[in-house]
Image (cartoon, rainbow, N blue to C red; front, top):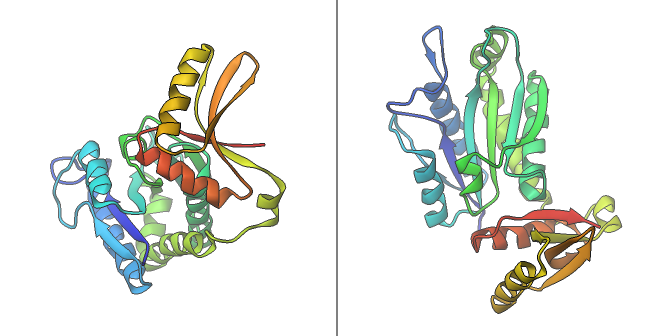
Length: 258
């Protein structure tokens, strides 16, 4: 069964996103999403879209749409902006937290875009963004250069096909290695933490809730905190799969390495 991905072209309709010299972010986003989608489909990925035309949906609507579709991954494409024109340039990706396969995918996408010519500004955690916090699958938001940077706009226009290919390659690279075990992954044990409490009553309440749903949960105590953690995994990919299951069940999670 092929992987399924929902691609989101940020903004749209009455929401133009960032605007610079008449250039609208929503237009760049949609054009790029459609190009990425075509490449992924040609590589056997089941691709769905939050929009394929110039329409508006709220971030929450987009997250709920992805959840209802039951896709494996959610990728949102944007252009960045800075208060002062032509001061900052580069690409950065945003994820809910710096763990799991979503982090790996974000890093791979950034690395591929760096080969096209973008400055790699790294991956940052943004737990307050709705399309990252309310989606029940691994989600990545990619800021493909600054729309108020002439350098980035020239790069975007002159290397458009290469940029679409780079983002698709970052996704495909992640999917192709998600089942592999690297030497680093053999070195550590990973668990998925769902809560840390000072009051053991709250920790036990969450523990019982998880056990009732057949999650292999346990409580560890240290530094005055009772931490509820699920599983014990020898590689990060297995921990990421459990994290995805827990997110789908409505838990806020973080992968911890021991």
